[in-house]
Image (cartoon, rainbow, N blue to C red; front, side, top):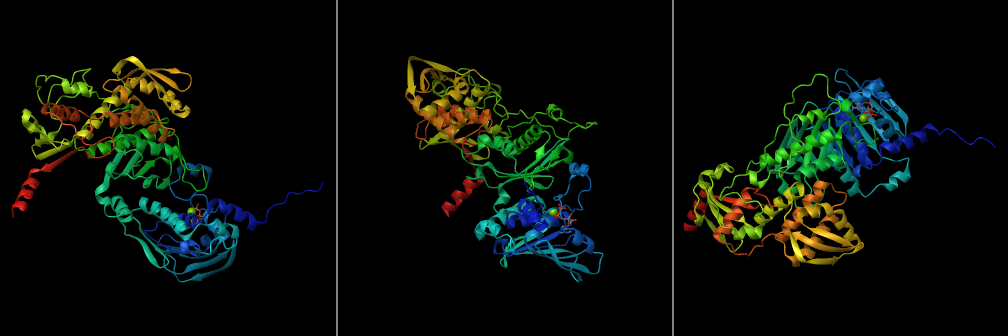
Length: 609
Ligand code: ADP
Ligand code: MG
């Protein structure tokens, strides 16, 4: 048999390799923007025509290239950024593979003008399909201008594969945004078909976000800042009340590089968890700085993935940082971060001389672990154990008054002067009360939901549940896949007070249900739990507990429209402010509002005018 294996011609090999790096106009934009950043530019302008299909041009004022370097830059694996294998573990630049320009030149018509500041003349280089058409000295501004014309002109299959201009432009904007967000000290602009899309002056991290996403972000951002010996996390989260229905603005950057990381994303979502409505996603802009030796960015040619040597540590620090930021924003500063020196010990490879970390965080911190008993009551004596159930709260006799504590600094002087007439119900929906600064309005249904939610979560996490045993066990039959959910949640359900045996695969006999729950509610409560669980796939234990507690609380809370007497209102007030997050409902909406006295005065004045 004759030999059949042959080497591919260079032009074909280059095109194949290019396909790895340049999939669409947006990939070229990303590579060129990153080159400009690596070149130390302080001003970068992007011009595109027809979604980058006919023109992508980037002009920077960076270091420029000599005539020789200009020619070299288009060779495959030609780079000024690393020289030896070890350098791979100390990468501080965006590029390092030396593949981008070679790839782009293989599949487009490229014209580059470049000039180092110190040279008088620059170089103009034209390349088409890897072939150098001309190279000559030319007068030009310091820096580099690269124009990519007719991307995929020689790979029609690729060109036809491109999506509509709208879709391709969206991809370009996405790449542009990522680079612009993490380089706020560089001025950027983007122009599409001669129309300005972005004009971003040199600024700071916060302003850059506002300039990209809109002025209303100014009020929505909460700063995040956490530094340990190994890692620094800085940036912003968007307040929970502005969470998006779809995954939108979620940005992680590691040493200036945009990354996607499902596990770390979970750390943020988890820190937000109980503050977000179901099916809402938090927005965040977080920059991580970590020793490049502790990450591996070398795993994918398009480089949005990064492997951390110790992802668990990074997870813990991010989660703590975000929780702390939310806690600070909270109306009542109830979140208190214990110092836990153990966290740095978690890191697999601590440096020889370990310095004292500047801020230490507790990765296990859980705002719900703190039991209500430990919290002093604002209004009445602490709720007795076993009496935490809502229905019995209503019937409980009034215990003796206790000295008041400073839980809500703004109100404590008022709280000290308790009299029974200080609660007033409006339209069977809102509870009104006096606070030093004005009038406090509490949504009774949401308040009750919050109280129950925290109670259930606590039970799920550590305490023994209170279950009421049924005289006549209740038998329920479920569909096969609903039954699977119940089987999977058995432990958690037991902790909540549901006790049951199974008959066959999908039948259940309930002997006990959570105290306070009516027998007639059992089926609908379980359905709600099953439905919530199905929506969340692959969730961790914390999520399961969270959604269980959330759906149960929503189902069992006192509905708006129930008349409450003064004592019941006091109970709600008391239990609400014994919660870790009294001012937000589990769905993220506000429970409490305060109308300042001066606004009341103003309101009356205006009316009287
Ligand atoms: P990499 O960025 O991985 O090194 P590229 O193919 O993107 O590979 O670029 C090759 C080289 O060309 C870079 O290492 C850099 O030295 C030079 N270069 C590319 N773009 C610019 C630019 N805008 N300004 C200055 N030098 C550049
Ligand atoms: Mg590059």
